[in-house]
Length: 251
Ligand SMILES: NC(=O)c1ccc[n+]([C@@H]2O[C@H](COP(=O)([O-])OP(=O)(O)OC[C@H]3O[C@@H](n4cnc5c(N)ncnc54)[C@H](O)[C@@H]3O)[C@@H](O)[C@H]2O)c1
Image (cartoon, rainbow, N blue to C red; front, top):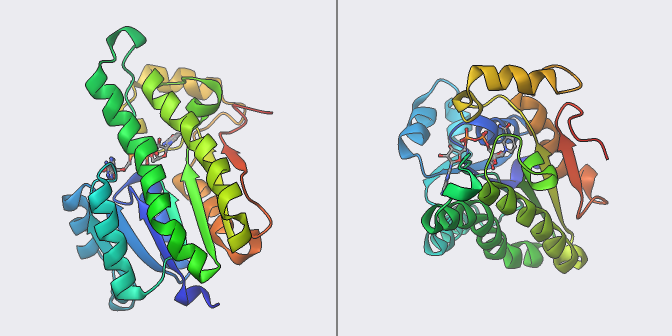
């Protein structure tokens, strides 16, 4: 199948890594659904110079909260009604908090788990049958170094949600392997994004000094790995985790 017929969904696509991934899919020639809860930022992208008329025809912007299962189902229905298929899902939407173990309350725990892990599970569940019927699909979960090694700059709830994504990757990879569907994880650390900008400058300097390549990652570097995993070239890779962390974690 031509790349131009592929339909890709990116959650958390309004900024940061998700925006870079969605832009890369647009450059790859696919039809791309930008999903985010930040409606204003989605509108800004829609109205930006990036959107020429040719690109407008093969992009869709859906404002939704990935922790809301009803909204996910509705979004999937809208995409199918418009383009009739879903080839690629990137579960990138996430929230990070640095709250200490002592201070995490039930509300914050549930919020982080329901967005980062619940969003990944329920969105994957919602597209799995569509991909099965097509006998083709790619699911890519954006986890984190925090889910592999423990916190660099984030709380227990964030790390647990990101570790959970690693398990979901393997669960879905095994369940869907007979249907031409691959499921993989990309695990970044310290990649430039609006979220990274919230970290105190002194802390960022200390972080950088500890990274073997001595710099932060570019969002395009994450997008390039995701683009490869989404492509037909990556059909023999499933259940795997791809580290993109400047050598911070070697295993
Ligand atoms: N930047 C990094 O260094 C880094 C490192 C490790 C992991 N990650 C992971 O990469 C992903 C993207 O991170 P980023 O740094 O670009 O973050 P970011 O905060 O800059 O962007 C996240 C996007 O997700 C959206 N979002 C948040 N909650 C949502 C919800 N409930 N429903 C829909 N959209 C929602 C936000 O509106 C935002 O546009 C996250 O899953 C994060 O955990 C990033």
